[in-house]
Length: 299
Image (cartoon, rainbow, N blue to C red; front, top):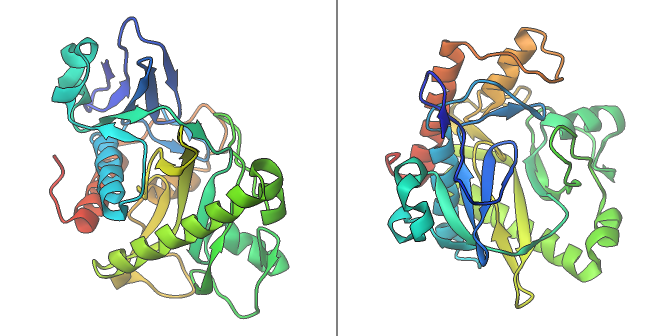
């Protein structure tokens, strides 16, 4: 296991196990199941930064577990209790505690499912140019951060590390996954987002948008997989600072993106080292998101 000077976990290593690494997660093949480890790596503009954010992985992992339980939908989780992990993992259980889960092997749907309840980010940029989002025509009169009249389903492709996800329309989604699955993806994405947004609103947080990923299990069921409603996959806005016309301070990695833009980072690797004040503030933001939404202290 490789930690940086701030005790952020940057890399994991378990000898004898095949692994695949994403931007943030390291996934180990255990034969009939997978171990998913959430590191403290942070990416922005699809660039993995050289500096980690301590406890970030624990926030992502534990918040995903919270939402999986909250939704009650079939998902890929087997257990997140490290004491129940296979013997081969026991020497590493303290490194894995709080930041990992054992999950079922499923066929992942090759579309990222994004729900937008508010007009912001890339959706706002497109709307300003063409009055559309993902090619769908919207009414006039929206401003930046406006609440949309209805939740939008705006899927994207799944890009390889270093590449950018590309927005696709509903017809293109049908072409990738089939009409029946596309319909189920849209309905489920909007249903889950709406349920989470209603819950979060009662806790003083606006979920502006979020990304879901789904898999198909061995029985052909659509199940929830990967991360769920985390600060990495969502825009969380404190309701107390929300105002139409500008983006409020976010409880997510927008703080890091803003800092990178302030130093004129060109959005191409390699990324710069994050200064300690940015690391510390980002850690505070992530922990606040978890604790405000879950009602629990971070373990």
